[in-house]
Length: 393
Ligand code: PLP
Image 1 (cartoon, rainbow, N blue to C red):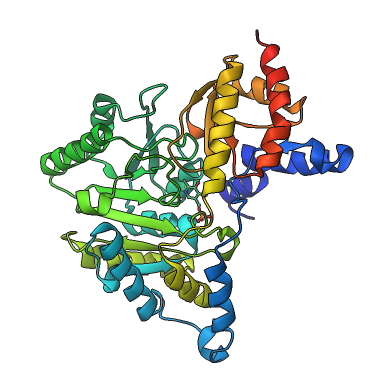
Image 2 (image 1 turned 90 degrees about the horizontal axis):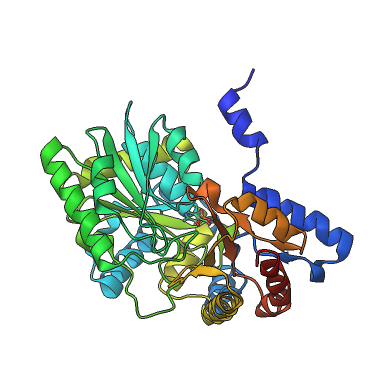
C-alpha cells in the first residue's frame, strides 16, 4: 500500500514535463533542429566563469571539509556572506543566524510552508502562478487560494485580494518577476499587498506571512524596479534560489532569509529548522554553498535573455499575437487566438512549436513560451509562428 495522493503526484507529469518529453520523442523522429521546444525554464546560458573558478579553487582545499556536512542550517561563513550582501545590495538587515541554506527555491518554499502550516490554514497566491505551489501547499495539508489579478496586466486587484484574506490565511506567496507572465509587480500592486496584509493582521490579531519566491530576482531587463519585500513588510520570508541567476538549476542551491524586523523571527526560524529536519532538507550541498556565497550577486549573461525577449516579443506582436510585455524572468505570456489554450498548444505542436497551455498556472486562454533557448532557435521558429497565427485569421 502506498499513499494514493503521492502515487497520483508521481504518476501524472506536469503539462510542462509532458511537452518536454514529447519534444524529445519528436526530435528523434524529425531531428532536433526541427523541433522548437519552448516548454522548460532551464537556463540556456552558462554559469559565469567565476563559478568554474571557485569550484576549481575549492577542489584544492581539504576534501573532508569541502564535501563534509555543514551545520544543518548551512555553513556559518556562507550565511554571513549572504547576509552582508543583502545589506550591501538591497539595504536589507538580515542576521546570518536567520538564514537557512536550501536545495533551491523548491526546498525554500516547501520548508517555509511546512514551518508555517497548521491544520485548516490557507495560503493565497496570485494568478498566474507556478503550478508547483499547489503541490507544495497541499503537501502541508493546507489549502491554496489563487486570487485573480487584473487580466492583461496581471497586477494586483486589491479588492479581490482583500476579499480572499480570511482568518485562516497564514500567508501569501508572491513571485516577481513572475513565472509564467514575466511581469514585475508595480508600486501600486506592492502597496496594495502590504496595506491589505497589515490591515488584516491587525483585524485578526495574528501574523500573516509574505513568502517572497525570488528565483528570478536578477533577471530584470527594464528600468522597472523589482520590489524588495524584506524591506517593506516585516513578516517577509525570502525564498531565494541560484538556479536561474547563476544558471545552476541542477546544483540545487538557495536559501531562506528572515529580516531583523520580523518580531517572531526566533520562533519562525526554529520552525524552519524543524521543517528542514522533518523534510530531510538539512545541510544543503556543501560545495555549492561555498560557490553560491562566492558568486552571490553575480549573474550569468542575462543579456542573451533580453535579446531573446526583444526578438520574440517584437516579432510575435508584429505578427498579431497579443503578448504580455515581460519585464523580467525568461517567459513570454501570450493570449491564445482561440479560447482553449490546450487546443492552441496542440495546433502549435503540428508546427513543432512546443508552448505550454497556462491553465495549470491558474489562467485560461494563455500559453507560456520559455525563451531561455538559443537566439538562433527563436529565429528559426519565427516563420512557424507566422504560419500558425494565419490559421486564426
Ligand atoms: N519558483 C518559481 C516561480 C519557479 O519558476 C521555479 C523553477 O522554475 C521554482 C520556484 C523552483 O526553483 P528551483 O529550481 O530553484 O527549485
